[in-house]
Structures are given as structure tokens and as C-alpha cells.
Length: 204
Length: 253
Image 1: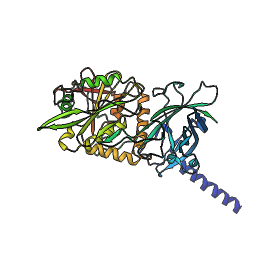
Image 2: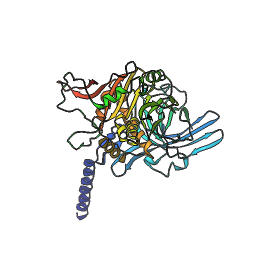
Image 3: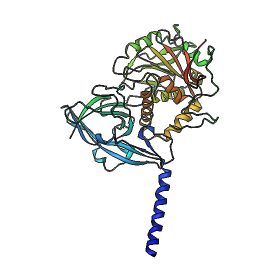
Image 4: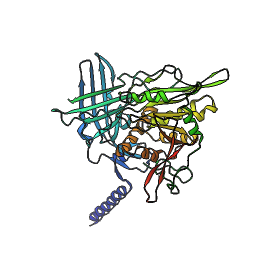
């Protein structure tokens, strides 16, 4: 009888803890991210729209090989303020046989926004180029890409699936920038990748 | 997106509609920013004379790069000149970016928003206005600081600083909360959220922008390439049915 009472007490305590934590954590869709949120909200990939992009992908046009490995960062804790699911990745970029960037070794050693490719805004619109092979309403993630060779630049990495391709393909559009603002006599930085280019990557 | 108090009970980053703003016929507006914008189109020898430049920039909006030109103050025998960059219009690096010179006597930049981009300001543009204003070496030129965009449909928009301390505080406090490797990366993060908002209301870009930036220490103005001396100030108001509308107040000077 004593053991049964102990078990019941434990069960009640566990139940209370579960109820309390559920009451404190609200779950919202990724696009609802509030930058200044510090309430512990979980911004979740509710419909698992990140998942079709996971895995290893390769663009090969002869003179350029661009390889990306994607994984999902689940419930990443951003400075104790909120939790968020992210599409994260690392990449290598080879031009004319010269490896200009390779961050692939970081895929399991860094977390969340520290990945070279990261983000979660899913803008389901083909308004922003390239609009070819884009179907209105499909998932189109707008991510960040870092060039580790040049700390003044950062890029936009827009990704969507080509739903009409015979094999599993993703279309990627990358634009690199430095913020546009140059002080007098300051020179434009030199990123390792082209300032603007469209890539088609095939699942490996 | 949540709200940050402006210290007066107002909502800074959203819901910029003031409950007391009724939509009556707005009176023409005499404000110093209007005057400096109108001056940009003056054709005199000492003036910026932007009319032919904005027409040329409009012709480049179909290309797959941004194009830009910066303006600076020059001085000769006590006379002040408003001159474009002597190198002329510059081709940018991508659809999203072109060079803008700040510091010294550089007081403003006009750039295109090409086909395939949203015809409204980005966070990058807002930050550029702050840099332009703050980096000017002479306080007396700060009233002239401006950022302008030229759209494929011939519309022109300009941003002018109305309160640099609020603007700086808003941008700096938000950047604190943003993930990112450097300032460009953080601003890009803001841009994505703004693009998301624009994509949900592509025919209401002015409304979306004003809703986000109503009390951020800068003001939005509108004109067109055919008559860039004719500017209106845009604000978000609320009509008697409680519907938000963009109110245009013509610059009178």
C-alpha cells in the first residue's frame, strides 16, 4: 500500500510539472517570430516544411561545384529568450578546381544561427527572383549565408524545390552584400562567391 | 512582431496609427524636409538637378542589378554646390545592393529597386539613411540627408530623418536582439521579415512600411520621376470606419 501511495504521489507531481511547463510555453509558427520576444515561446516548424530540404545537395556546372548539407536545428535556444526550429547548413564552394570555401566540417559542431547557412522565414511567394521553376504557394525559405573569408559581407540564400524536375532538385538564388554603405575612399569587399548567382542543386 | 514603447505610450514598431488622426483633407505641408527634397530638383548651376538622373535610373530598373548615385556638397569661392558623384551612376553588385557613399560631405543617394524587388524601402535603406546622416562632417548639412528609390513604375520615394536620437535608439536596440554574424547579416534578417510582410500585402507596400516604421524617427515622402519637385509626405491614418489608410500631405513650399 505504501508503494502504491508513493507511485501515486510521484505521478501527481510529474503531471503537475508537465501541466506547468505546457502552460508557460506557447507554440507559434516560424514566420511569427518576434525579435524582442523573451517569453520562452517556441517558434516551431509546425507542418514540417523544412524537412524536404534536408540532406546533401550538389550543383556542378564544370567550373563550379557548390555542395550544401542541410539539417534541421530543432528547438534551438536563442540566448534563453525563445526557442526556434531552423533550417541550417554548411557548404563548400569550388571554382576552377580551387576550393574557395569549405565549412562542411562544422555541420555537427556548431548550433543554430552559428551555422554558415541558417534561417527559417518561409515566404511562399515567387515575387522575388528567380521566379522560374517556382510555384506560388510552395515553401520558399529565405536564409542567411556567411562567407568565412570576408567578415564584411553576408548573403541572402533563397531556396525552393523545383516541383517539375524529374529528379529531386532545389533552386537556390544567392546574393551577397556588404550593406551598400561605403565611407569615402573605402573599397568594396571581395567575397569568395559571386555577388549574385542562381544554382540548381541535385540531391546526392 | 511585438511592440516597443516610444516612451510616450505610443507603439514604435507596429500599430503606428494614432487614434486621434482623422482623415480630413490634409493641408499642404511646409516642413524643412519638404524644402530640401524640392531643392534636389532645382536645375541651377549650384543645385543637384536630379530630374534627368531619376529618369535615367528609371530606365535601368528592368536590369538585374541595382543602380545608384550619391550626392555631395562642394565649395568654391564661398559658394556651396550640390553635385552628383563625378563617376556618374554606378552599377550595383546584385538586385539588392549598389554602392552608396557616406561620410565627409556626401549627403544622399538615389538608387533603383529593380523589377523583381519590392518598390519600397528595406532595412538596409533605413540603416543607410542613418549612416548618411551621422557620417556627415558638418551639422548644417544634416537637414539635407536623404535616401531615395526609383521604381519601375516611375514612383519615387524618399526617407528623411525627423529625429536622429529616436532613429538611432530604435535601430540599435533592435540590432541587440537579432541573430547574425555581422551588421549586414543582422540587417538582412530584418529585411527578410519585412519582405514577408510585403509579400502578404504587395499592393499595400506604403501601408506596411508605415505600420512598421511609424515612429522610428524618420519620415516617408513620395513623388514621381516626371516631376521630382512635387513631393507628398505619407502617414498612416484611420478613417471613420476604423480602416487604416495612407494619407498624403502635399509639400507646399
